Amino acid sequence: MIRVATLARALAAAALLSPLAGQAQFFSDDEARKAILELRQRIEVQRQFDERVQQDLQRATEENAQLRRSLLELNTQLDALRGEIARLRGQDEQLAREVSELQRRQKDVAVAVEERLRKIEPIKVSVDGREFVADPTEQRDFDAALAVFRRPDFPAAQSAFAEFLRRYPQSGYRPSALFWLGNAQYANRDYRGALGNFRSLIQAAPDHTRAPEAVLSIANCQIELKENAAAKRTLEDLVKAYPQSEAAVAAKERLARLR
Image (cartoon, rainbow, N blue to C red; front, top):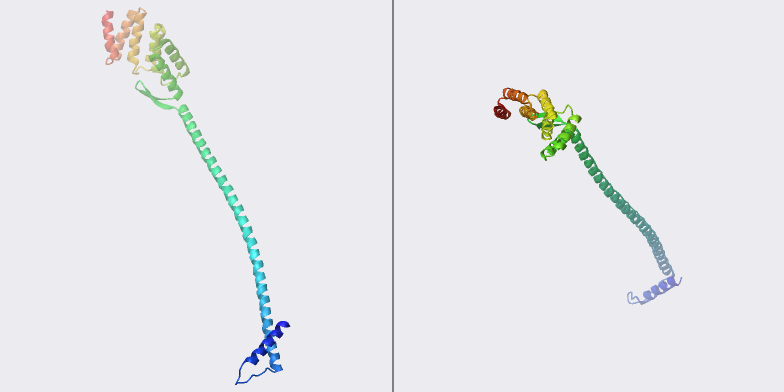
């Protein structure tokens, strides 16, 4: 090999130039061969080392390429995972909005149901000193009829209270409704009708707060009907039955005028 020959010549030249004990000495053939063999061994070792290094480098390069491919695949998977997370997050946000809307609707429905129940369920009311249970619609209709009377619109009030008594014959409002119906009839000069309703009130609830006024109104109707004797008896009965009432005071004054 050219490289080996060159090295041999270099070694020989070096040997010639090296001073040893003041003389130049030359390598023998055996020594030259030995040096060449050693050099060849070194070269072979270097070659094998270079091959291993090359193999290791190639293997490292392949592993690096494989690692890069794996990293690319991992990044692709990560991108896909991020996209999936974003999609799921969007679904979660949409679901949260839908749940919130559903809860709001449920609350509205609950409020509406509660409101309807309040309109349907009986409630405790107090009218003319009496407490009783009535339906909300019953209370509403009575208050509406009373508002018409206080307007005042006596023909409409007469119709309203008559309709109320027809719709709620067992109502706790009945004594009061009879009283106001009688007053509306009296204002409309329906004295017979008023007299009958005032008497119905007395018969149904003689201890009612409006009872003394109803008896006085009966006397007033009798006076309007020119039934003075009957009116006098009614006023006397009023003074006896309800002596502490304001109606009794008024009855005494009218008895004085009737005599």
